[in-house]
Length: 250
Image (cartoon, rainbow, N blue to C red; front, top):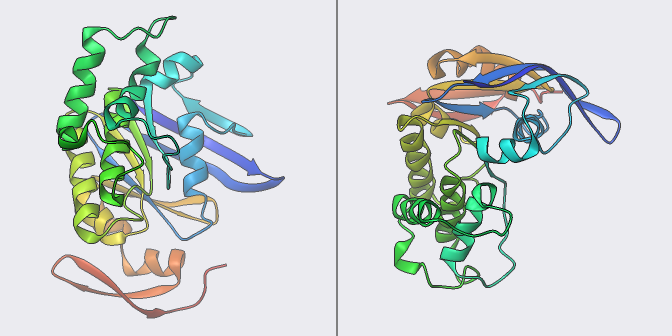
């Protein structure tokens, strides 16, 4: 089974922001969705998560709301924690799609919570209020909540945006590990080097449309980056460094 968008159009506030976009995510792969600000990346990701309707096209598989919550784990951009619940309690919210009508946790739910916290190295502060966490700790806890869902697909919107380089690498290593374990992972990224290093495939968006979809070395070419971002890049030892502007993309 794959998660896919087929020829999708999406409008926000009466303005079309995604145009005829098609992409897929298969189990076992990490796909990076990149592009300049306003390209439609987060909008398309939310549609794939079932959080936004589409004007045209299809999001597949087409399932019920309850089944969708079990199928797709969501990690939103700049997710805030407003209530001083414990870290363990916050992670346990990832099991809600699996609980019965009385929200009773079964041994399998508790096992999933512990496994998710162990994978993200959160067990040491399981009893700490979730509002008393550093940025890196908060990112790991929210990722643990997504992992606890045990969904076949994980959708993450710029999970490394507010993190220092060490924690950004740690975040991407965790997501890559989940992909290697058989989940499909789709992640919106602004950091082209993280996309090049960790993604099995890179999808490049510009002006609401898919400009390219393929291996990093193909999609992160001088020509495509120039067309999408209007920048020149220097390359060395697997890294990309912007060196100047060609022109501002429309």
